[in-house]
Image (cartoon, rainbow, N blue to C red; front, side, top):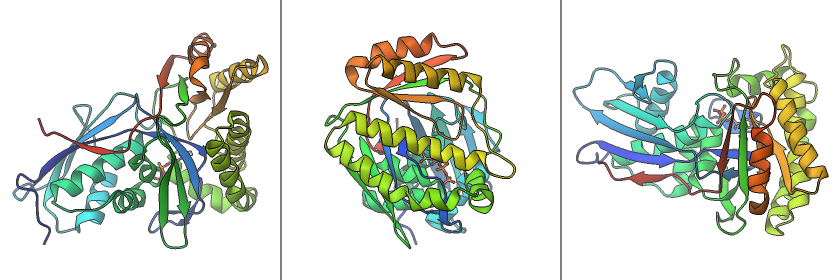
Length: 327
Ligand code: 2P0
């Protein structure tokens, strides 16, 4: 029996994270174990808040996203709660609120599942240190595990489980992230499905995985040395390698649009001018430019003026998932 929280409800917040060395591929789809490690930045200006309330008398789980009932994500949310508490758990009313577009390549599943696991385990009165909670969240969304930690985070993938640690705290190397939003609608192919397709059909997948440890070592060293140029080189290359794997799938997975290329070219032009900035792109068409704080205003202005860019969101590095007061 779980020692349920007195009122069986809790409230939590988590920030999404953006990977510089990407997670793309699973060692075990059953337990959602990544095939290789990754390194990410936890953001501070984007957030997902999640309220979870269990009720013995409730007949169904319900999910609302920004106040609107959502059936698309309900199955994944319910499966996450079953994994945490068993299928005979009481049904839950789950409410999610985010200040950014979901399922659009802005890492919404990382913050959503981190906040969900944080709130649900507390509502159920379960304990757990940060690493245990991160592992539980990772079983539902691989990237969510990283959102339990602040700043610059490394995830290593063992044969049976993941490990995580903070490589640099949010204030230790205060990088800025400028997100160029080129499209805010949901993507056509989910990243989980695209990863499985990559493993099954891309001729580059095996090579991609073989070189992940070397990229992870290079990125970790660049962070600990605060060597921006080395981090820029490894991150851009790692991103382009991941997209090469996607593009060579059958059928191909191409998340970019014309404005994605325009925004990449803006970042390249800034770099040629000596501005410390580099790009990364996830499973979506948005371009994330990472820069040193002094360059942030210039990067935001130039990306904002790039053809096809609809919105620019600026963020620093943020904290790991945490509980909020109920009211
Ligand atoms: C990352 N992505 O490292 C990579 C880069 C997308 C592109 O982690 O299948 O939605 O649920 O474990 O958590 C996508 O993450 O994937 C992702 P699942 P998830 O950020």
